[in-house]
Length: 355
Length: 278
Image (tube, rainbow over the protein chains, first blue to last red):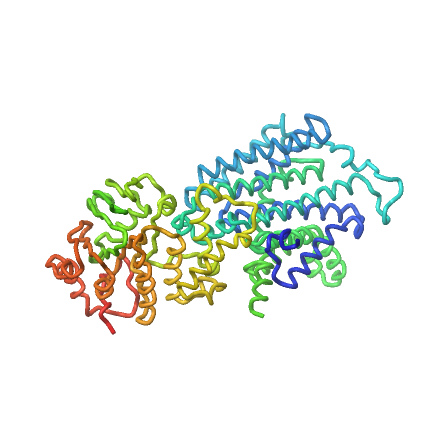
C-alpha cells in the first residue's frame, strides 16, 4: 500500500524519513499546534511552495531543462482564480472556470515554448524563457482592465472558505472550525495529492526516460527515444502543476498581484529551494520548501531576539538587526550549497550508501 | 536480399567531400569490417547511416525501405543499433538502469506506450528480467547496481555492447569497440561480437584498426580512402591488394614508431597499428 502510494521510491534514509514524516504531521496538525494567524499563513505558504518547487524540479532536476518561465505559469494559475472570481463573483463555478482556463492557457504556452525552443541549445532555451516571462509580467501589469495592474485584484472566496464561515459554534480542541481552517485543509490535501502524483510521474517509465535525457540526450535519442517529445511533455506537465500551485496561492490569499505570483524573486526562491533540497528528488522539494519558508518567515524574529540580547555590543547588535535578514539568508544559502552540493536529500542518501 | 544498403551516399562540409558517393550493400549473417586511414570518413559514414548527420545526397535503405527522412530515434526503432567510438552511456544511472532503458525503448519506446506516465517502472518486471538476462550474458550482473560513472573503462565498453544487444537491432554498428582497452579486456568484447555473429539474421558493421581482429572476424572488408570506397572483397585479398598496402598500411608503417600508451583519439593524431602486439 505504502509502496504504491510512494511509487516504490522510499526516502532510503532514516533521518530523511523521520524529517519527512515530521513535516507531514506538522503540516497536517498545524492549526491545532500553533493556532496563530501567522503560523497558519506560513504553513499555507509551505504547501504552495512544495507543489511549485516540486513541479520545477520535474523540469530542472529530472529533465535537465533550465527554465525561467516557471513563475509565469504560477502567475497564470493565480490570475485565473483572481480574474474569474472578480468577474463571476465568488463561488465554486468561478474557481473551476478560473482553474480550467488557467490550465488551458498554461498548456498552450508550455507547448508553444517547448516546440519552438526545446530544439535549441540549453542556454538559448533559458534565455527565451526569460524573455517570455518578462513579457508576460509586463503584460499582466499593463492590462489593468483585466488584471488590476500593479494593484492586483482582491476578491472573495466561496462562503465555506471565507473566514466568516463557522462550521460549529463550539471550538474543537480549542480551535474554531472556521472557513480558514477548511481552506487550509483544502490546500493541504491538494498539495499532498499533487506531490504524490509527481512522485509517481518521476518513477514511471516516462520519468526514467527523462533522467536518461538529463544524463545523455544524444544517447537517449540514439537508443530510440524521441527526445523532443519527452522534453515537451515534461515542460507541459511541470507548467500544469505550477498553475495549480498558483491557484492554491490565490485561494489562500484572496488577493493576487504581479508581485505575489509573477515576480522574479519567486523564481529565485524556487531555484534556491530546489538546490537546497536536492535536485532530482521530489522529497527535496518538500524539505527545501519547509526549511526555506520557515527561515524566510522567522529569521527576522530570531534576529530581533538576537539583536536585543546583544544590545551590550553595539556592532553585534547592528549586525543582528532584523533589517539584515536577507544577508543572513544569503549566508545560509552559501553555506548550504557549499556543504550540501547535492542538497539535503542527496547528502542524506549518500550517507546511507557509505554506511 | 540485402538488408542494409547505401546508394551514392555523400556528405559535403563546405567544399570538402567527407563521404563521396558510397554505394554498398550489407547482407544478413555477415560481418563487414570498414577500414581506412584516419580521416577516411569511416565514422562519418556511420553517422550518415545512423542519422546523426544528414546526407547531402544519396540514400540509406533497410529492407528496401528508404530511411533518408528518418530521425536518429526512428532509425534506431527501424532496426539500426549503433555503438559509439567514445563511450556514450548514462553516467549517473546504474548499470541495470542503462540496459533497462534500452529494453524499454525497444519494447515500448515507440509510438504506443512511450509516454507511460502513471505506472511505476519497477512493476514492469518483464523489462527488468530482460535487462538482467543481457547483463548476465556480458558478465556484468554482479555490478548491476553500480553507477556507470564508477565502472572501469573495460566494463563501460562491455555495457556499450550490452546496450546494443538490448535494442534487439537487425544491424549492429560497432565503431572501434576495443579502443583504449588493454590486452586482457579486448578479447572479452571480441567474444561478445563473435557471439552476435552466430545469429544469421544480424548484419554487423565494424570499424576497426587492429588488423588481426579484422582478419579473424570479418567476412568481408571494405576500404574507405578520402571518403571514397576503394576496395571491397574477402579479407585476404583486400589486405593483400596494393591500394590497401599504400592507402592504409602505408600510413600505419610511417607511424609505427610513434606509439605511446594513450588511446587513439579521432581526428587528432594519425592512427597507429597496435593489434599485433602481444
